[in-house]
Image (cartoon, rainbow, N blue to C red; front, side, top):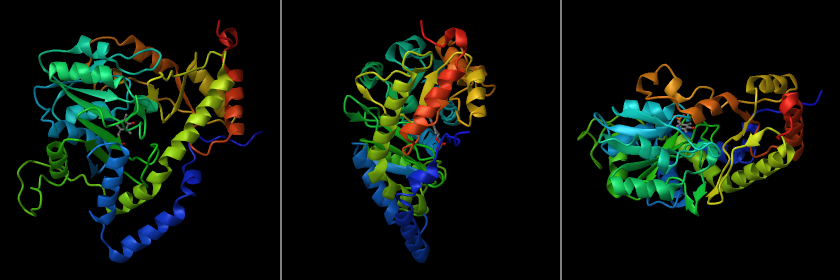
Length: 375
Ligand SMILES: *Cc1c(COP(=O)(O)O)cnc(C)c1O
């Protein structure tokens, strides 16, 4: 049998940067400066520049980035926040943790992204904010969403946790809404070697509020003056050093993901395993290689038998999760149908053409016979 194809090979990607990170970590250990420090400042500067924004604030993880962004925008009790139902649960979790009510909406069947029309249908007098989720690495139509939000006086938050380096008409993920939120969970396109996150914004006051709230609500420059109820959610020096070392590689890694997606497109062409569409205005960074297939669980089982790993992102949309069902306001057919048919294939920067060819052939053979060729 052929060697197994992993879903993700983080260790292979880390070979390129392991020595530099080991050296930086030895210096941090020698200085024993762990919270704050030169790498945090350096990475925040580098990340803001990369994202084409004036400010970046490191935080503990992507979920906290979203909660802090909403709180800093003064979104909370009595407010409704519109978001797509097909996202990682953290997007919805952040809304509830901030004290607001999530309003789930459907998405476009080709891109699986929320558009302005979806948002429009869910608007109410209580709507305070919209969270655009750049799912699988492709940005939403940020021109339409930004126009709608500015016309209605709504805050626009970008959940860019899967979209490090993605662009919409040349503008980077995180830079178009009022604030952009990132996760540096190890498996993301830019991952720490543990948990980490950041917000980016052009608004100095907003950046200052997030920074203060992430650090116990401390007044800037003070030690024991607390103006607001904050929390403890800081990016630490150890993670910031790793991120700073990895950042110069991000564009190359994203290029490699795009190349692998082209190989997948060739391998699956004409078959009933359709890659999520990328529109011409978007440059996707392909966090995941998501395809829509019939009888997904059977296809996944055949792949597993053949040593090909796969995943499902996500098997249950947020409005059908027990924790969030109380907020559901009706069926969302595109999200529900996608949840039954989505299959994520192996994808990581070092994946080879041979590995993609093998996954593609295995998928083709695994498709139900009567629908193997798209009619
Ligand atoms: C990963 C992810 C998050 C949460 O990030 P954590 O760092 O795991 O808290 C939020 N939203 C989306 C879309 C994600 O993929």
